[in-house]
Image 1 (tube, rainbow, N blue to C red):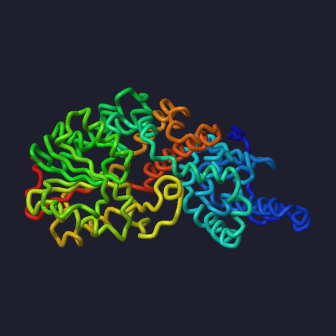
Image 2: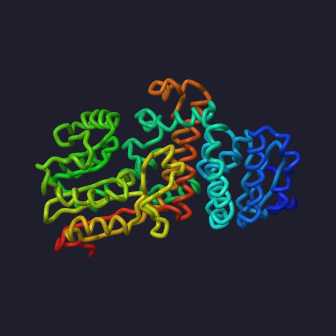
Image 3: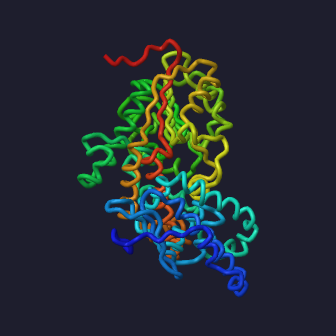
Length: 465
């Protein structure tokens, strides 16, 4: 921890930083060294204007630099550059490049959470200075990317770990017993959304919060004994099992994952619910004609992120098709963008490159509009909830469990390539990056998490007296 309250911050203006490499000295460098030097100078030159909240220390082989103003208790972030490929990644790929540098060990970070917070707290400055610099320069240099980074062992490692996320063993390592890969709902019983930070995490807290979430969804969907429930996005069967076991429903649930279907069916058999829960390996657009107006309730938990903006209308047309005309309800939840950030086109970032390719976060309004249009007025919006405050703790709990339970031998059974220690370390850092990246986004309001409840027209709202 190099910085102290008595140490002045060294500020670099654009001209000084860019002059650090003279034309004469640059001419003596190899092409790669010149590009790295140029990338480093370009990035450092804008940070003094970009960092206005908190304090950033960057150390590399050429020295240590300070940005922002250190104050006791401020967000103080330290980055150690281990490999100068870091500068190229940032220049050519921005925040995606930062995530790649972290995953393969090109940088060491004092705290991932603090780093994400610093980025979001200075988002305006970053977008006006660093992001614009990256955009201008990377467009000119992108053709050189493969020459310097594209064929390296590190890049091959990044390409590989992007596809190692279908293992049931991986998700068993960090999810709760219900295996819900979605936001939990915390109450005072677990100390609330900060209970793990204030009182320490306790065994069973995540299970209690996830079970609360499942029951909350099913209650909002008005599921009762004898109902037939349709679910898009099975996961590992956690919600479907609870709907049948506790609420007395019959469930048809859809997934595109062979691995999820296999484990979900094992869990359904273990619960003695084979005749009440059916798992279909099926795209939601392929539901059969005989399902028309066959269901009393529809639920979908954090699956809409994979639908895509141009398919929202189709999605809700099929929900309308499957639900009964009266006495039926639909509950959908999704990680969402605030309205001002939503766009049908979303550029590739860490999430879309390494976690969920081709995903698209909706906005609450985009979903409500699609439901109204696709259902031709046959859906009445009954409730809107934002669960974003509950997601950071969920992600922290997952991170702790990942550290505790995931071993190299365990995951290498499914992916033998991860027997290589460097590959395994990069794979694990990818997940920690996700938890910190998403946690900061939810905590700072960059992303939200909405749950929407729809009922049929003229159906009586749930009584609140």
